[in-house]
Length: 486
Image (cartoon, rainbow, N blue to C red; front, side):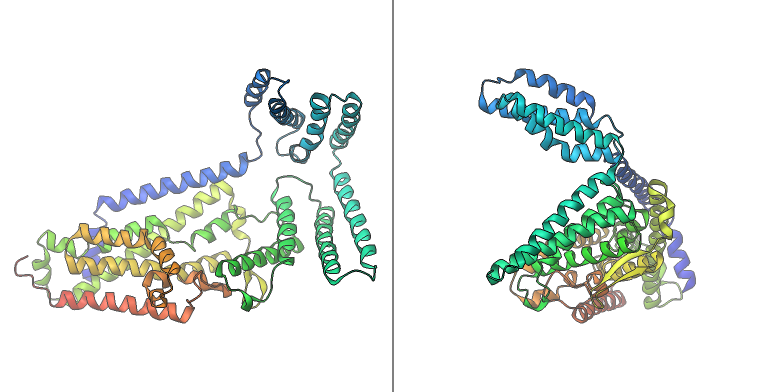
């Protein structure tokens, strides 16, 4: 048996195609991680001055006596003014972010007063307010703006509490005020996080984390917590996504994981392991879909059967060989991804845990990266195994490599479309189709599948039966296959 496997491995690794696919996967992985790096590091770069110079030239073509064109003129000029004010500061600074995010309102009112209302007094008043705003920014005192927001929120809270003291309020009015008070308290939490943890308004991961927490907390506040009451599956999944974001962002803020981001090397490597990789599918289909049929196409099947091995051992050695190549390519791809993400985004994050929300325990978990990758890989392993076994079965049944490869690829490529169509039907029996059940990642940490009729025991049974049918059928077909005319 071992000699048979060695012989099969030797034949496979003499194929140029497997090396071509390996090289393409390496190139693609480094290009894709390079794009992520550029997206992360160039996201704060402003549009070029050349763009705004062209935009400024276009202003000369507007007829300021035409009301509609004047409004367009004011809008474009305001955008130019915002850019000119912001470019005084580095694009990754909190000052640049503040001007880019907030200066439009100031400058738009100034331009409306100057060009539309032709009110010089109003314009000068607005300009003084904007100049004061710029001065505070130039003082490099971001806490000033956070404290301003905090003061405004505290005033809103005090006003709302005073309104709630009114005993004549209706139940609906009281509920609305209580909700407004809860929202204000969430916003207050956000500014307190900024002050306590030294997080200015900018495009940093820490600032985005605070913003994401506030947004998700407000959304979760208005979410129906009783999952049994949900009729629409999509609404339930949205509720769970909001819940997960709320608890994980809060956990990260409270535990000073301020730079944690989905665009870190560890997060991307973890996410990759949860999704079937096309290059790996290509390799296993290419190997499993040809490993038997090529023996018939090349006429070598007779010499193979003349050896002192049973048909069962011959076919089993081929299947085991497919599994070995699959495992080797998985390890190769993970190593390439590890290096590519590390070089692009830094190897430091590999020592950090993955933050997971467990819907079963309703608690946030810290997961070791290697453990997380293994869990994700095991959860999607059935996808690879079923595709591999299907290609192997077709290779044995049809003895046509082209047909075996084509059918296997089509099953994988169109599986998501097929699953979507099945989910739209009312026929529950269709939920037992293998592609609906083969991804166990949907069930990790108490998660639920997109289809309400599915559950893990059902998915597991269907997957095991599918594998056994394909696997056993391959051996039965090969055992009784007539090779006299081959």
